[in-house]
Amino acid sequence: MKRLLHIAERLIDTAAILAFVGIFLCVFIQVILRYAFNSPMTWSEELARYLFIWCAFLGWVIASRRNSHLAVNIAITRMGPRTQAGIAVATQLATLLFAWVLGTSGARLVANNWDVENVAVPFNLGVVYLIEPVAAVAIAVYALLQLAEALRSLRSAAPPESAS
Image 1 (cartoon, rainbow, N blue to C red):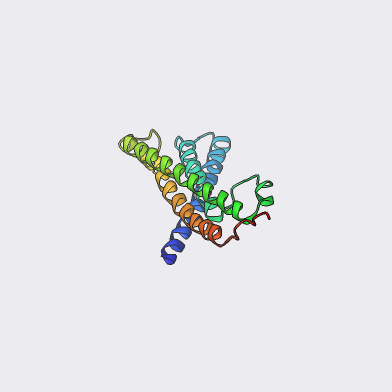
Image 2 (image 1 turned 90 degrees about the vertical axis):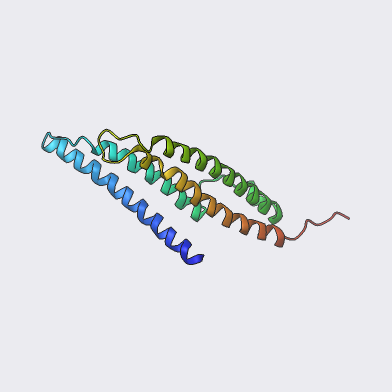
């Protein structure tokens, strides 16, 4: 399981890098062709937009894996370990719910757009939307792993002291 997770993480990292490089190349080449040769490409803007969508979702997955989303946790850090673990459990349960909503709506988007052809690029819109359910599954996996860790922390945290 750990090896499969490692392979998936490397694939996600590689896909994010390739998407970013693709955006850069599309925009760079478009600028050169438009301003230096007065001959713009018709498909580069559309491809860059779709790559940006993929890059954003892949970045979200990577941030979920690293648990590095922006958070204002000044109040949480002042709470006891049991409360912190309880909040972590609630956060991961909310993340799982959001991943389910994202995954189911994304799957419908893919199904509804699989036969819709793009104007300028040679793949259908379903491919563009495919990242949504894929990202939802990946985020759910990371949420489950972090939920298990939070539950372990909750069980191992000392019970609150009783007032005498």
